[in-house]
Image (cartoon, rainbow, N blue to C red; front, side):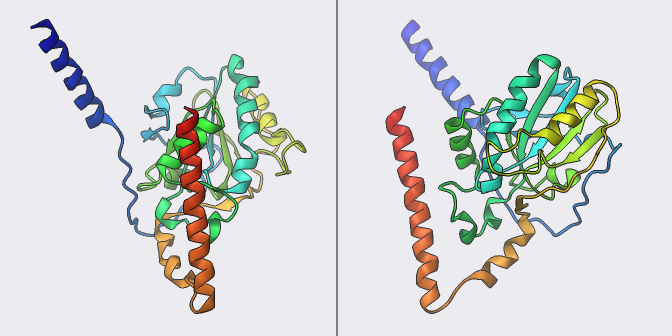
Length: 260
């Protein structure tokens, strides 16, 4: 009887876990304006799934003296170049009461195949989880690719794009992490200066900086996909790139499974 009850408990736990597991559903979204959040504005709340299996909202960072929200993504070479700098920010400022959360604003259905030429991963939720694991992210990595429910209120221009909020969640800085993309040539100086000033209760000397990187893949940009399709001899190149991308994804997934 005890064994039977134990089996029932295990089955119930498995079913509950399966039901609560997030299932991504990227969909068409009507085109809309996405102005960047202005300095002095309150942080828009969100409730988004993360690659660690949890959902996060502003209340999960309530104890932080400073909250850094960074819009980034998986496929973009510029975003990838800043991953280690984001991890360093977490390590250097965690003891000072600074929380960092990353959000991928990109709709997977709007990423063009041509844009995947420098990566083996795309921006869907599964590939986000692979990247987070492989790079050992020390910060929550949230997915907003279904409907952009949070991203449209922050208005990121490119990935990466950082927003720094004080204890009252008033925006003190938005812009780039630093001015040099190449790893080893910079250390997120602009972002660090903004965090330091906010922690000290001072105004940020340069509250906005120009971002650079990959454009945000809003869901309404899916209309551009048919326009970029090639014909004739170029069509072969299009499908060759697609096949190579899929092979890279398959090989990476297989190697990851084998290693684990």
